[in-house]
Length: 259
Image 1: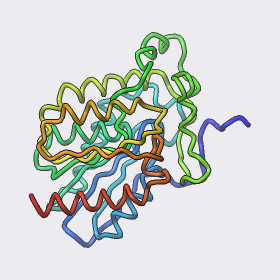
Image 2: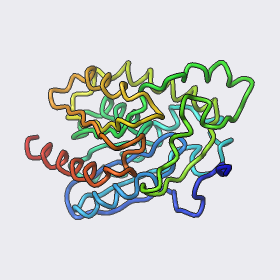
Image 3: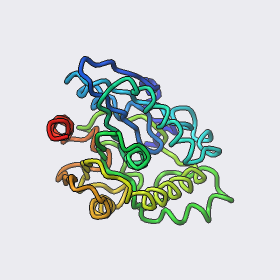
């Protein structure tokens, strides 16, 4: 059966803020082509522990794929910076993100030393074949996700939570994603905060070796890479979510205890 261009349009994927009771805030960023539906279960779990959580819908997302064509990676980053400002009143702020959101989280850590720590869920630093996009983009605006090897495998499996977003990609936006990857690698030496990385071993959307690459390049003395045996790309919706959630909370608490 042909998949719709926009998956699960009936769900609410807009920006949202959950006000917590503790002096801890988390900026939680969704991934490329997704919406905040992707990170809501994790956001609600963090909120249940008293943390405030802000999840912005990034530019070009949640509407129609064509809206991603004029967007530049700086627009995604500017939206992330504004999201961080919404947590300015909270003493202890962490940044976290799935896939592209993880890359944006690293840039925020590089630019804002006061951030307490970063949590990356399958950070999209290495995507096989992404270089093709800049050559195709002048001729083809929108393509099915399977233009990259096994990209169609991003469809959540039957026992995972629902995902919302585009089932096609604007190639101009893929070009911007590659630029964002390069910017992260240029600035990663500035990230001194504790960082926790989760990576699914069954990820067929990005190359899982990218998480190992980031782990090795991070100068932080407090860094961890957790490999998830049963998870694909969207680890914040996949079958090991309970473990991901508990480890995320533990990381935040441990960072603050030893900070």
